Amino acid sequence: MVEGFCVKCKKKVEMIDPKQVELKNKRQAIKGTCPTCKSTVYRIGKL
Ligand SMILES: [Zn+2]
Image (cartoon, rainbow, N blue to C red; front, side, top):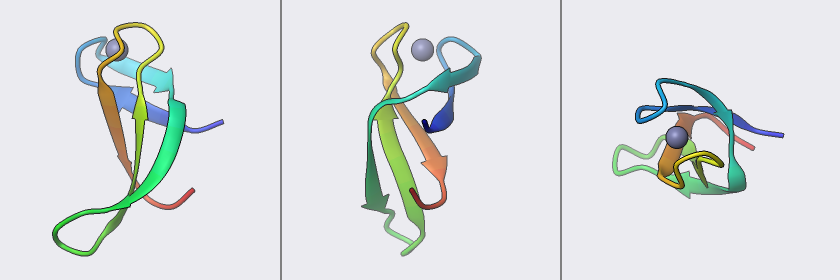
């Protein structure tokens, strides 16, 4: 389970379908979907 902060819900949520992505500054991040509002949730770090 991967948690991220949803800016729409203003709370931590459990991401749906988390994926490892690389940001422009070469940092690793995890991108997923908020289960409540379906917006994109990011978290810095690795899976
Ligand atoms: Zn949300």
